[in-house]
Image 1: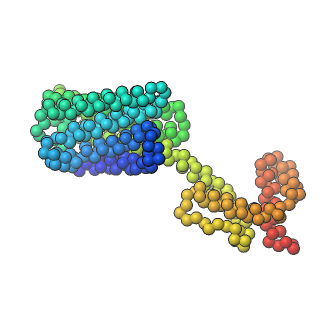
Image 2: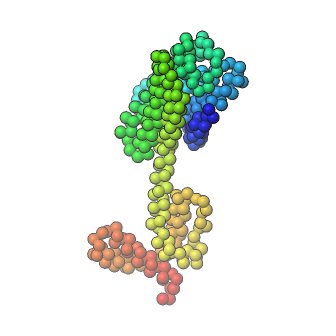
Image 3: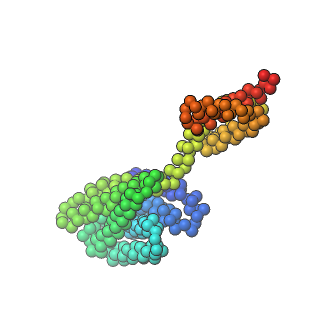
Amino acid sequence: MNGLINYVSCGVLWLGLLVRAPDLLRHRRDPYLRAICAVLGLAGLCFLLGAPPTVGAVNRLSGVPNLAAPLTYAAITGYCAASQVLVVHWRGGPGVRRTARRWRLAYAAVLLGIAVTFLLGDAPVERRTDLDTYYATTPFLAQMILLYLLAHLTAASVTAVSALCWARRVRGGLRAGLLLLGTGSLCGAGYSVAKLVAVGARWSGRDWSALGTTVSPAAAGLGALLTVVGVLVPLVSPRAAEWSRARHGYARLAPLERALDELLTRRTLRLPRPRLASPTTRLVWRQTSIHNALSHLQAYFDGDLYDRARAASLAATRDPERADAAAWAAVIGAAVRREADPAG
């Protein structure tokens, strides 16, 4: 009853929304980004409104028993609409705006149906966790419950199929993100399926309310975690790959910087080392220091030494790249010694 799963899921989803918010502010007109942020924001709102403490607070403040139920169902329906719009923009092609508008209109009709059926129904007994099964046989409320569950199941299924099918045609971080998002949507579909099974059991006189109070929240929480990770992976993976390349380049340049260290220190050619910097910034710092040293040594480079060293290395290795590297190493080492002791 403490709603821990709901609040943790809401926090995870809204954390993902916070990460994407700067991109949305920079590209306000991008419908794809708007759809992603709507999915994350509305999904978090669903968990927030569905938490038992929140349900009790909404019902108490409003003075209407079970008012939190249609509000939660409305948030779920809005999430479904945002998911479908996101899928439409993923697919692309002609008629994207028209198709997205149709999905929005369809789920607007679902919202209207939820509101009307709740007003026509009678739910005097507050149920914070098992309203779906408790009122599964109540006129109009049963239709409201069935309406939102089928709408959610449709959205989750379409999103899962679209994401997993698209993942087969792409690679890298986008593929991983789509696989996670598709799996998260399948878990979301499990939420609806468990609820529908519990409602169906209630219609047949059985009490399977545990499916709706334990299995469904767990499936929804896992789906929320996978969804937010799936949305963030394509954003984070290019930067992670860039940082990995930068760390590799930084490490490869370490021997050259050590060879130039005495010159860099004596001639004050090294820039101040950046603190708490990204791998890319550290790489640029090392490259700049090396460039400063090589520019200072240019007058001491020996072209004949380069030719002799390259020819010897090429004869030994038959590798032009290694021969070039060995020749430059010999030239730079000789230039460092000549600059330090011109007489020698």
